Length: 143
Image (cartoon, rainbow, N blue to C red):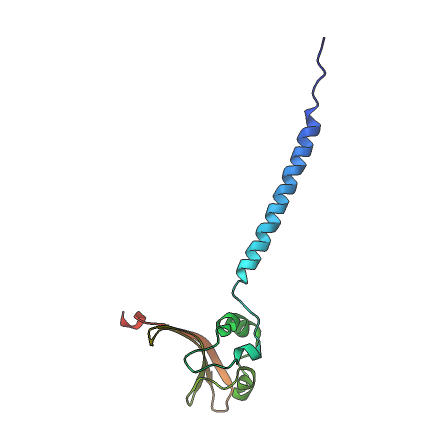
């Protein structure tokens, strides 16, 4: 008596489709994870959160999270000093050609060991000519 031939092609096709489906799900999950990680710790700029009550030397933690959005998505260069102050509040430090906002400060005891701030330079007619983020870490200037 002869055994009937097995039809494997049907099983292979369904296994192949199942594998493709699983691969598709894994790729979609990986893409969502990568996009989520790229924006982790970043927040859209919010004037109220930026200007939360704080003391000089202890900037609101939200500033560091909003910094990327602020410098990448908001017009800062070429605007007047008073427009920046309207958006960000009074600067923490100001001199005759620049002003800055504290972004993050870490302490060891009472001494700062890390400082990050956003500095603006302006012309005589109070137009912002440049801005940049500065970081200082204890020991880096001793090298």
